[in-house]
Length: 197
Image (cartoon, rainbow, N blue to C red; front, side, top):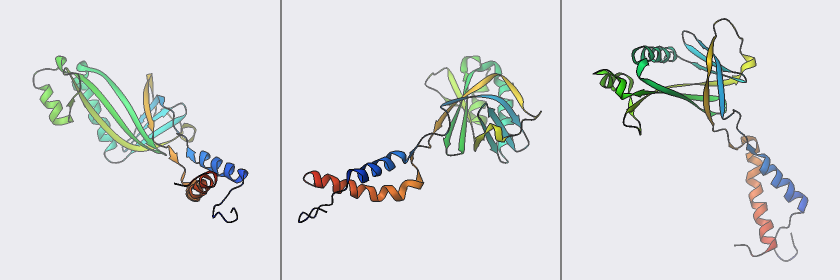
């Protein structure tokens, strides 16, 4: 503290250390922006999507029924399917998968559009000649090397490219106790250099 001023002055080294701690406290995304799923495995209550580096595991009573519904959709409307996208939204090791199947309206038989909307919740897209059916599942991600590769996996040819929105960004919780006291010190340093507003 400067004598008679009521202001706290930090040595440059302390300030630099505080700034470095704040800079290191932002965690980077754990998963890549895209990944090619090379292998797929479906069990009674689980689905596994395996890439070279990560495997995505989805489980629960409804998981297999979602997959079976998608197989029926593919069987019944395969000629009208224009394409599909797979998006994963990740937060730490938790993953929400969204599988969108795009269907051309001009290739549907009479009554199929209404069936798609009723049974699959098909929604129109920005293109008036297209509907989208969305399937969603929740699960976890982990390193592929931690999952045993067995004969139950099916090789996907070609592989499916998945886009990943990794929300694992922002403040690392381990540094929060260090960050909270750092702000007043930075303010104090600012006040020592000039008028404090």
